[in-house]
Every structure is written in structure tokens, then in C-alpha cells.
Picture (cartoon, rainbow, N blue to C red):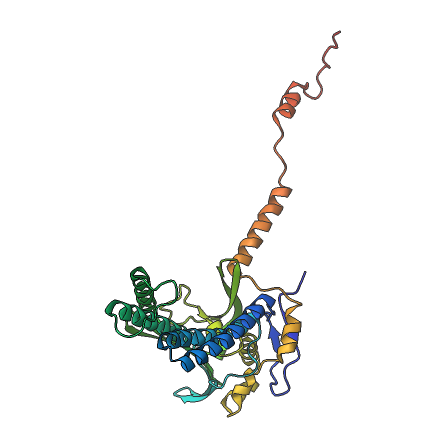
Length: 356
């Protein structure tokens, strides 16, 4: 059985001992898909240059959209394949607030990329459908859809993409984690039907009982995605407007621009080593989130399994305990055994006569 947690040497510029809980595994299928998107980007680039040379405005618009899509996919897919967190993000920096100087870890911009791609698809499809209906200029519809039904399809496709953008903007949320020498501040700025909401929580180090790693898992087809979570449990309880347990706050580490294992190692080290918390106020404090080299993380990821959610682990433990109790429980005698037992004479009585 593989281990569920692994400790290994920290990088030279980061004195914090590193704890690997969420393994970084290399997926060859996603690497192959990344190579395919790169090849499609190159082909779209050649096709776009050829369309510009021939002056075909319709093909120029179509190949421009496809080139942008494949370039974005080429940039995004390697992180899913396991090639990510080469170093500390440039967006991680120092910030001074009313609580002092802290290491600021903002939210990732993956939502912005999704909105950009959906907007590109929606606007392009809508323009192509509008030009097909009005008959203005050269058609922008792809081959095989150069009919009125194809124009309707492209219009519905573009409207659906724009509605998805509207839904994302109506319910979007952005989080920021601030790590001070005095504690941790977690800010969530969300929107509910375009109404802004803010959830601001501050936890002093002495009030934090434990920091528990967890995993939020979801499946898309046959692919499983494991998203790291950090659960902060306090002794006194915090103002919880979104959590059911007032003493527990969930930090969605997978949304932040910091390597989850390095973030957890830093928080756990600062919680158990009060004398080292002054390092968080220095200008080079973001370097404390430097993860180990990628090759070391990939090698270490082979030695441990992907952690399942704690709820799933508890359910499996309860099922295993129930099976153990079932095996220990004496089995109920069958009907034949009960009849034979009843037909036997009681102890001390005369034996039954033998006939025959």
C-alpha cells in the first residue's frame, strides 16, 4: 500500500519543510492531447496565413477563432497533465492592511479564460449567423452549414455561449488568502444575481486548533479531478455565514495561485513555530511558497496515492468496521439444526430407546 503523505527536502530558497499530501502525477493522455492542440494551432496558423494571402475574409475570421481556441487550450492543458507550478506565481506578493504586512495569494484567472473563450465563440457565431440572415458580405458559416438551418444553428450556438457568460458573471466569486505574522485572513467576494457579497474572516494563530487537508473530487465522464481543500478548525469559532460548522472554514486551495502542498506546508509550519512568523512580514516572504523542483514532485507523486475526500474515507472506514462486526457476530443456526436440538433429550434424562 502506498503512503498517504510524504515529507521530502525543501528547495534551497525555501526553508519551510515540505509535506506532500496531494501528489502531482504525470498523465500521458493529457500530454498527448496537449501535443495535438499544439499541432492544430500550427495548422490553423498556416491556414490563416493562406487565407490572408488569398483575401478570403470568411476563412480569415473562422481560422482566427480556431487559432485562438487552440492556443488557449495548448496553454491550459499541460497543467492538467501534471506540468504545473514551476515556481511562485508573479501575482503572489506582499500586502499591507490593518492587520499588518502579509503574503497575499489571489484567486486564479481560470474563470477569465473561460469567459474569454465563451465570448469569442458566442460573438463569432452570432456575427456569422447575422451576416447569413442579412446577406451582408461574404458568408462566415463553416463548410456544411452554409444553409438557413446552419445559420439558425450558429445563432443558437452563439446565444448559448453568451448565456453561459451571463450565468458565470451573475454567480462568480473571487477569493484572496492573506497570511500575517498574527494570523490568517480569508476573503471571498462573490455575486448572487449581480448582487455583491463579501465574506471576510480572520483567524489568529493561537486560535487555530488544526489545519486539515481534504479533497473535493468530481468526475467528468471517465476522468476524475481532485481539487485540494484546506479546512481550518478554530477553538472559539468564527463568524460563519456560509459554513455549517462555525468552528471550521474551508479554503479552496485549488482556486489560489499557489502550489497546494507548499501552501499547506507554510500554514502548518507557521502554526507550530511561532518564532518563525516574522518571516511573513519581509519583502521576500512570497519565496516561502516556492515548491520543490517539478521533477522531484513527479517522482514523489509515484509513492503516494491520490487522497480521497475525508467523507469518502470515513464512509469506507464505517463500511469496513461494519463488515468486521458482521464477521464476529455468531451466525444464526439453521432450521434443521434447531429441530435436531429440540429432538435431543434434556441432560440427565434416560436415553431414548433404540428401535429396529
